[in-house]
Length: 181
Image 1 (cartoon, rainbow, N blue to C red):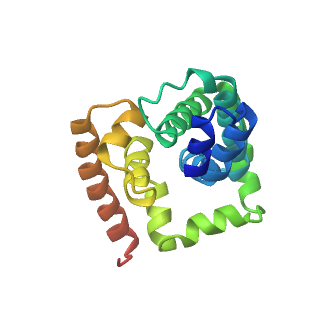
Image 2 (cartoon, rainbow, N blue to C red):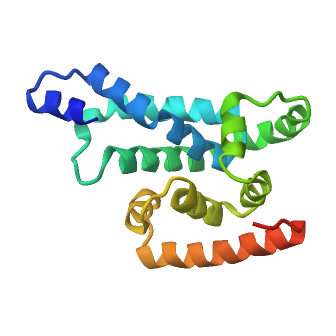
């Protein structure tokens, strides 16, 4: 990324080069955040693709008020919320549950599940989205509260509250499943 900024300062980098660098740097993270929302890797990949198409179309509008990471996460979160609200997703959901039984896990899904204790990941994925997204961004992506606030577009105090409540819910869920950390 430092190399890209040096080239940017010289005015040589093309829009395509910048997009490729952003995709290489943040592509997996965008896919992971999408997966935490929709719980389907194929749909998460589609969302990630939409995010980068949107990024490419609006790259010149990026104002450096935040990092590219924060900007891309915000686009991803908004796109996920749009998908979850859509009628197409609601109609697709029952078929998704049926096909999930025969679903061969992709390497990305395996990485997400193996990144921490599988039981913890499953418990996290069972939480309501408003807590799941904050816990995921804070613990898995190691973002600061300010960055999460910028991404989700909520006050920092709201983020702190959701972190606290999310941790309590996660603890109860883990106790319910009898999983020790």
